[in-house]
Image (tube, rainbow, N blue to C red; front, side):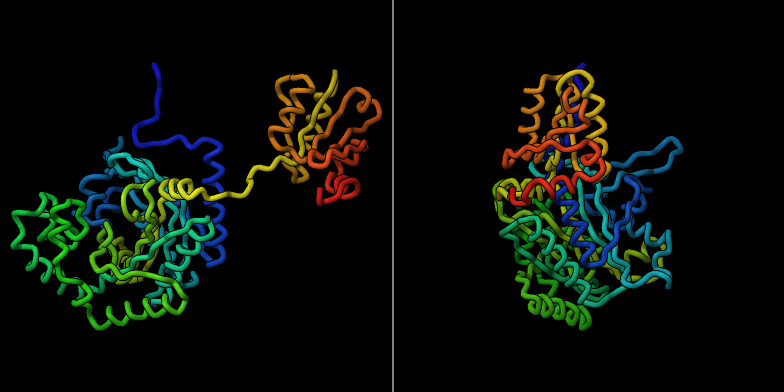
Length: 432
């Protein structure tokens, strides 16, 4: 029987994993600069964690969730997104307590799962990098989160990004706009898709997010939520726009954008790139917004929050399409070559000593001839070779060669294993 990976999943092989590692380490660096700290939550949660927060009319809950009953008849879901699990952890572990500095700034990285049609940059098991910040309702925090997302994409080398923002306002705004939207859509009821018919009176904002072509034509004439903002919502959104202008961050206001999950309030945003590698037109690779009320939904105290999620697979496709050049991440410092009987133990001791001293080092494990070993050193782009033969064994020395300049020196083994950095400094120019 031939075994294959499940549909909608991918094997991330070593060469590709180097790119992933670079993106993840860059994200950690950026997040550290903004003082965000890592949190790791379970791959699965109780079903209600996602159904209560995402909304029972969202595609995530109605179509895409991987959920099942376990052996204890508990209703379990693989996480379809990162925010709900982080909020659950925030509440359960009382991170809202006075001993925690506000806002509480967190980030996560990991696998998410949604049952949907696999396509370029979109898998059933996919990966997200995301951030969440709790405890501040100030528009300055909204702008910090947006700025951090833009900063990350810039640092990984992505170009041609477009930022779109909108506001979903507060409860007063949503109530007023909900009725206006129903009044507009009701005359088109028979023309709407089945999904939108179901959602119209439960959550009409979901109709704005429909992917059905006919629905999209209908909602083009829908009233704008910007005309129904409460005074507080208007003030918050104006402050966000002003602060983005202050930082020189370009943006477009898209008043039809609602995001795919029901917990968002006030500021929402999407960062897009126009690339044929992901289909026609602009494709969203990073998105998020404010979700005041979500902490209370999961049993916590009234606590405002805001965050974003970035799709790593989509980012990788775009980086490849834009031919982003990554730094060398796996430089081999030393390759140890053994020639003749009795040298295997010596080269093993050498590479282990070098590794303990902070150098990357390798050697032959296939009992190959010297020519094949040197060929491997060259193929692996080793900076130095350390060669030891029977003559060197007798004199307790080894030959150290710079693969860049070709210069070679004989050095006592004890000097190599004690302080190889000093050996390099004393015998080779750093410009080599």
